[in-house]
Image (cartoon, rainbow, N blue to C red; front, side, top):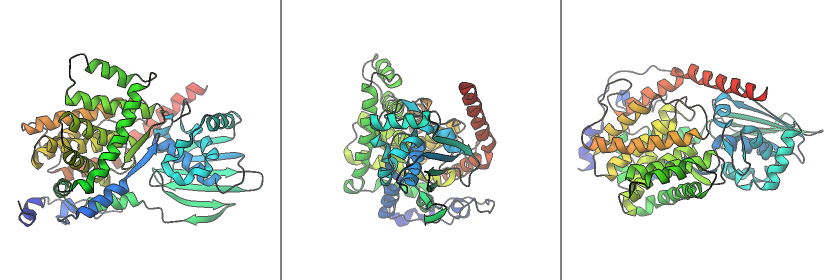
Length: 467
């Protein structure tokens, strides 16, 4: 079908309106008003993908705390103490997760390491690549001496870190906001040295993508050449290497046991291979192995679900490199697209409703399906997993994301046979764009109280442990 013949087929038939307000962008209202940008340029899609994918060592929440402290410490010749304030969301996501190379969990050790890695702050979320045994030992001493103080509070944005480093003569501070490597302000002795508007280039990229119907985004991804999309294969292989590290490490449990279980019946199915690879990489990352991960939409676990869910399926199906690269483009684009609605920080598991949704669409395409079948599979993922809450980054994320990726492939198979959750049932809208909008409303304001309760539960548990 020629592009010009698809215009009426692309435009949604949605008539209701969305309440106006600063929390609802013009792009988010496109599906309600019919105000779509219909034709998408491949170069625009590629630029968005490249903006939204980055290399990260360890969980992004401890990583951004380490980075913010490092940026503040870089303004001083020496640091004697550090005060760190994080948002409730950063606290929830980072307090129980392994920090690479330390054998420890949580944000406090990440903050202490930031002091010692100040010279590496320009490496962003890859800063923890430099977690040597000497750095870890010195950071542990700082914690034992009480020189690092960290607390969570109500902050200007759900993704927020403020670090203040001090010595006997000077203080310096740094603020990170909106995105995990987005330093918005740096100052010394109370005077700003650097400041820029606290907006995220990620928000802009997501909103640009959401100006187009999901169908058009998928069509554009399907038309990419191998030269255009091959970088996604390289990124997927980085995450595959993390999975292989997890499978080879004798301290890991989930990945190796799944390999043992899945190998008892002969050749593992595509779903079993997806489960194995995503679980192994997720466990390695969450338990603090020093493994680089290609993150997407601000999340390494999204990156594991997205890249390995598709790559493991493509390898099982013996897809050629071009098919695999295009499938990765489809999944990556939909993962990013959903974030225009549900945003970076979520009360529910983003791997389940964002990355797994992308995997479902890519799986349908890899198995020869069409757009209506892809939309059906995406709706089945969201309608089934939409209520899976997020209680922070930790080992259980490996269980959640591998389950979501596996179910995405299963729902793709069902959709190819016409089976799935129908439109206009529960939170499922009349098209996938409306469903994403509904998810966004469920996240905020819908689940704000639940998210706060989860933070309170974590606080109570820590108080009992420290008593």
